[in-house]
Length: 476
Ligand SMILES: Cc1cc2nc3c(=O)[nH]c(=O)nc-3n(C[C@H](O)[C@H](O)[C@H](O)COP(=O)(O)OP(=O)(O)OC[C@H]3O[C@@H](n4cnc5c(N)ncnc54)[C@H](O)[C@@H]3O)c2cc1C
Image (cartoon, rainbow, N blue to C red; front, top):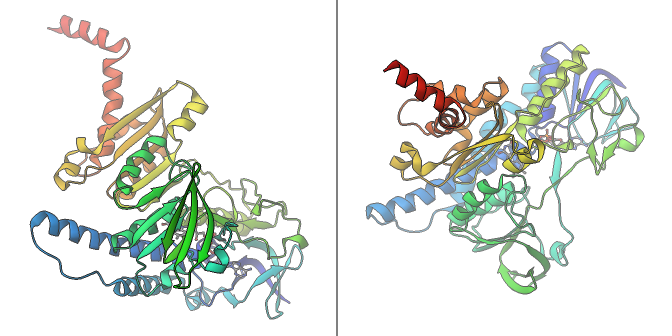
């Protein structure tokens, strides 16, 4: 039995952060990864391939728009296979950062195999090798949920794990699930010329976004996709031609849809069912691992990071959690995780940015003691010059201007909204952003315009304007 200071079970976004951090501090670290190469979902089936496909699709879309507007013609169809090659190239370029040998060079013992607990300190790797860990980190990630729809398994379907292997562009694609993963991919395929229908039984897109933000992006997506909301996918039949005949029910109305492929994007489930947690004292809820703020599980020397935790299934959250675990598992500190300032972005075009509370959540928590500042992008010069005015910024603060939430729909919103994450995290009030000089004309001016409203509101509401008027009269 090989003995380690730290065993990391799963070499994705969370596990790699822990392994690299712990090894650089001098800990003896074992990393167990079941795939040929570390990198996890984000690199192989998630963030990286999806963003590569999104950019390829965006280029195609904007070439078409330019042709229409500037009176030139485009010949032929975009080469879908070329786009998929580009996706693979992006994955392979970034794989270099996550390569097993690179981690070996850092001093990490990398094991290839499926790891599972034998008890609170022992992990067995498929093939029989047994490791002892003084401390252990669970970072096994998540998998797509496959809904129990009649005939779906028999008919066949794609998930994020198989969709990037397509060689031919589907003519008709049904996406089940109108969350971030489903919509990012749906829009990309539509831009390559696939006829895309998205079905979801929820009444709105995205689940966790602010209602106004949802209607803003929905009006854009509806121009490119067929969105069937409040719709249940009832049954799938595979026709002799290989096509799928799908029965959906919207309200009391039944509809038949023919699709070449079905992409299932109905949520994620944590990969915790087959890792031998029953041999440990680690508790779960619905499969998600329960942790304290120190990211310790119910067994203090076992930690968990990433998608095995319920609330923030993002690469940057897994990275942030990984750093907390390095501090606690390697140095024995009691550092606590804080999710108050974790943003996320959905990379549709335009992008959707999210930070903190939505207006509804803020009203639920603080009642009427909040302020909401909104700017539509047709009021921001740079978006007007770009002819990209779809979208808005919405900032929610308390009465004193403390930022509670910030949301946006807009071209590249994930980049220019970052300013507000910095402000929130460092306890700056919204009014402070107003004093920061923004070069004219940048997209970030949208944030400044929202911040300006704070001062306008202060100057023109309440007792201040009356006092000001009196002072000016006296001064004259
Ligand atoms: C299509 C899609 C797009 C996404 N886009 C974004 C995005 O743009 N931005 C963003 O922040 N997030 C995005 N995400 C989410 C992001 O991919 C995850 O939040 C992130 O990968 C979670 O990291 P993790 O370390 O928990 O899991 P992973 O990165 O998946 O790593 C888990 C690793 O554990 C291994 N493993 C599992 N079980 C075992 C075992 N028993 N033994 C050994 N190894 C095991 C797996 O093979 C895997 O390598 C996206 C996800 C998807 C599906």
